[in-house]
Image 1: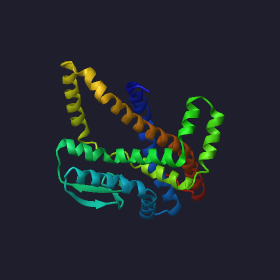
Image 2: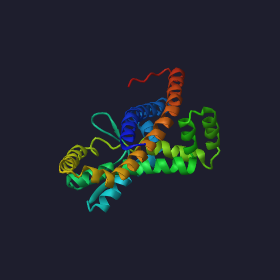
Image 3: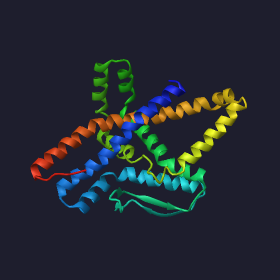
Length: 252
């Protein structure tokens, strides 16, 4: 796929990824609340379930800050209810860096999360043949490949890892704070280079690298969305059954 095609697909798949992640976080907490009927216990169980993803998220921030020479402070993966009612599963405090390093530290969980999703999906579960079969509209072969995939060693463990990592890798609003000014500066630099006639050389030098990077992100996002699509009905049905059994109702 060309750079433009990959970029469009990435933009298209990013929207459901964000919506699904938000839905899953809220409703998984709801399921545990219905089971235990105690908010603190439900929050703790939920944080334990998501712990691998949270550890990778905050650990990625710490590693990026360390490599970039930014002093890191307090580190936590303990859940904390914020004043606005949202749940923060972890955080890392650092000294205030420049915008460029802040942007790199902020994007680190997304990059490492995508790397883990791609490694687990392709190397351990073998999702590649499934994608190839679907691309060829061979749905019977795709179904057979999915069945074969479930026979992989430690299938459920790798599936759980993909779920927790992929649904914890999206940077928070604080992580994204420096992205816009850095993106605007990058766009300005690229615009100047194109204006002075270096556009073709820039595309030849960085086009392949940019396409490969966006393709990797798109692959990780697609795996995440497909997995979430499979799990959302299960979570929804479980929640409805628990509400019926307990007589309780959740409002989101």
